[in-house]
Amino acid sequence: MLHNEARHPDGLIIPHRRALGLASDHAGFPMKGFVHDLLGQHCDEVISLGAESSEPVDFPDVTRKAVDLILKGRVERVVLVCGTGAGACIAANKVAGIRAAVANDTYVARQCVIHDDVNVLCIGAWIIGPQIASDVIRAFLAAEFSTEEHFRRRVEKLAALEREARGGT
Image (tube, rainbow, N blue to C red; front, side, top):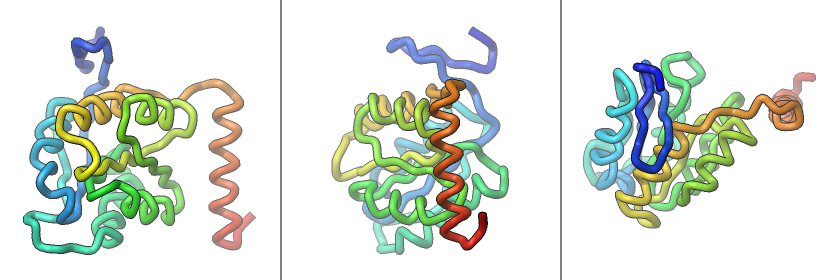
């Protein structure tokens, strides 16, 4: 284990990152502080956006600001917390270069990175509690995109779909 990694009792090795992004809407706000503290264990800086209270905010606006952190190179990964994770995931996947998934269990959180190079994890604060959220986020952070050619080829095809949708080739 390297000095810039953390090993957890479940055996996961999580690389320490320079920064991670976090955003929530009002539905995810009650879990935001917990997630912020968890992410802070695995990076030098948590860039936190979105709701600062339970006052309603629009998840598409919050999501856009959060995924811009990836597009501008400030972070490699973002965690979005809303009621179910679905709305934030839909909004994130509208942005070229973003691959978001809803994961409310560790298997999906790991596989979506390994197979699909997901860079945005969406979790539902109404669906899972803090312990499961912690396990899911750690699985997401520990996972790395596979070097196997068939996974790389498939993700490149996703990028081609994005270019096609924008009118490019």
